[in-house]
Every structure is written in structure tokens, then in C-alpha cells.
Figure 1 (cartoon, helix red, strand yellow):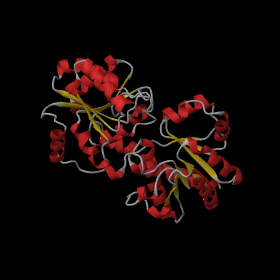
Figure 2: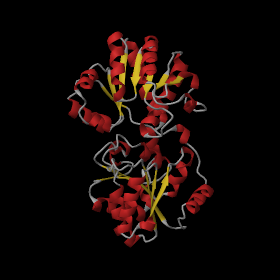
Figure 3: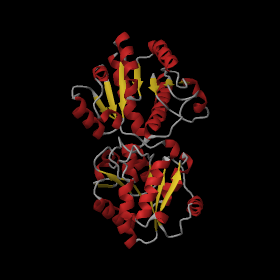
Figure 4: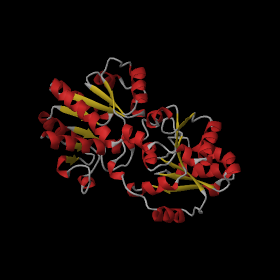
Length: 370
């Protein structure tokens, strides 16, 4: 039984994990003739219609009706040996199930900032009832062990993976059309960031990329910084004002939300992907960019270290050091081919088959212990 907050009604990293784990559960269930279900607190049933990850019959959405979600979860949990929580905010429900059915195995997926700080006393007590904490990166596991003093708990690191449904060919025609749509001239260099941005969330590093552009433009005069993803109006205005004050207003572009079927075009258009963040639990956008052959630059102070395989797949920098940002960007822009990621290594680390295998190993081991 997989309990989620959102599975289809949002497009962030946590929601991608929910969709891909649901796909694993479906394939595992099909192979072993076991049952499974996916419950979502905030989704609507219509959100799952037509999805390619698992049959909609195994999905139940509750449209923010917390009472119905909790009641149906307790009612149906009797049928399942393993309960998986997609987020620490679902811990109270899992804890009650564990108290009622002590032999059931309770898993918690830990992503990033939601578990990097101290939990309240009640959740801290509940955390000790979890049979396995699955962290999306070694960084998150280390953070949890440090903050929650939970070294005695059972941890399993299962990195996020590339969505196999993103495996598509990108035609040069589509990339040229995108260049024209964004009004980026042929031969003009492109720096690309994909992330949700808000005023309350300024640890993604976009400011330092904009500031680094002053130096970069002395070497690569024709260059654009493209920021994709949902950005609230206050943050967009803030970044545009910053760019304007530095004489870079015409070099900064915001695309807004980018559908999954267009991501490959943006990654391919980019000469480099950068997200010098301080708050990535893993950073699946790095793996996606690398899948399309784009060199990547990430911060060395969060889960990006896992996504860049400790620097084997991309360039790690101090996200607070503008000189470090400048140097990394200039190096890649000067010789893009020298910084292209090793695709075989990428898929051996973050391919869906690897993700699936690790989850199945964990599920098989847990079922044997029941």
C-alpha cells in the first residue's frame, strides 16, 4: 500500500518518485501476483486517467478530503503487508497502522528539506516505529542521522531515477523551432536552469548565475540564461530587476512551466545545465539533462553530489562562491564536448531498471521477514 500526498497533480521531484515507484509496484505485483494500491490525499481521480505508469484501477484519489483518506487507509491497510509513506507528513497515519498491526512493515521515503530539520516531538517518536527509511541520496541519509540522532534506524539509499517515459528522440527541427520561439539567435550560447522558484525559496542559486553572467559575457558575448519552471511573480520580478541593474535584462528569459514532452528540446538546446542549489534532496533534473547529453553543474552542499556521482558525471562547485560559478560555466562553454556526461555510467546509476531492482530487493527482503 503506497500512501502519497500528490502523484499526478504536480510535477516536482517528489511527485516523479511517486509515479515511478507506483510503476515499480505495478510491475512487481504483476510478476508476483501480489496486490497493491496507491492512495493520494490531494489528487483528483481524473488526474490519473490516461497515465502510462500503472492502471487507474489501482489508484484512489481523495481530493483533499482528509477524513475519507484516513478512514479508507485504515480500512484497506488490513490487506497489505507493506505500507509505504511518500512523505514524512504521512507518518502519523503509518504510525497508527503499525500500532494496530505490529507485524506490517512500514517504510518512509525521505527526500530532502522536509527531514533536514528537527521534527516535533510526536513525529520524532513516531519515526522510531518505521522499519526502513528510504532516502533519495546519501546526503539526506547523513542529514537525518545527524539531526534526528537516528543512526540505529534502518536506512536504505535508493536514488531517484530517470523517467523511462522521457526516453525520446529529439529532432534538430524541434530544437531549431524552440530556438526561434525563444528568440535565441543561431550560435548564441544557452545556460539553462529548471526549477520551481519563489520568494520564500532563494537557495536555488539563480542569483549567483545572473551575477556570474557579467564575467561570462566578456568571453561569450552572445549568451542567454533561460530559467524554466513555475516562478512566482515576485521572484521573477526580483530576478529581472537584478539582471536589469547589472545590464543583463535582455540576457534573461523565463519560460514558465515546461511539459514533460518538451523537456528534451530544452535540455538539447542548452549548452550547459546549472542548478547551484543548497536544498536539493537529489536533483532529478541533473540526471534528465545528462540523459540528453547536456553538461551539468551542481552545488557541493546538498544531494546534488549524489546526482552528479561525486563529480564523475558533472562539475561540482561551491554554490555560494560566484568565482566558482563563473569558472565552471566558462570551462564548459569553452569546450562543451569535454564535459558531456558518460551516458553508460549515468544509466548504470540512475536508470529505471536500477531503481526498480533496488526497490524489489527491499520489498522481497521485507516480505520474507513478515
